[in-house]
Image (cartoon, rainbow, N blue to C red; front, side, top):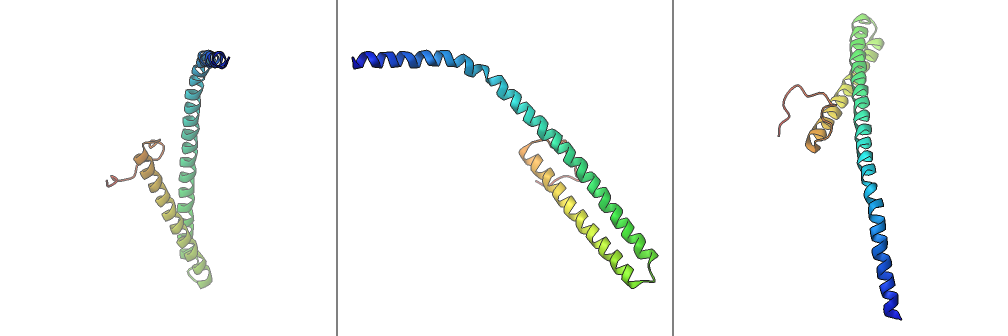
Amino acid sequence: MNRTRTKKNTFRIIRSFFLLTPILLSLLPARVLAESQIKTIIDQTGAILGLVVTILFIGESAALLWGVIKYIVKADSPNEQSKAKAMMAWSVIGMTVTVAIWGLALLLTRYFGIGGYIIPDAPGPIPK
């Protein structure tokens, strides 16, 4: 009796395997499609972040230029000059941080080989 039950269970397992295999194999294209969608999302996010970094750097450059203009125009007021110096200092700090993050992102994308075309190349070669 026990041997008959084991044969039936074995037959059920084999039958289930052969019935489920085509279903599982039909799900493989969905996985490939999901991977391509994830890559598309990553690429679009990278493009948006590249645009944001560019706009941020332009804003920081404008703030630095505005600080220089204020410093020159308000030469007679020490209080206004100190505010202009602070504006220039913070814009230089912001530019430094932005360039550092930009370089780190470039280094990581080149190291891992993902989406390096989104980030503009550095002016010179990256040391290896």
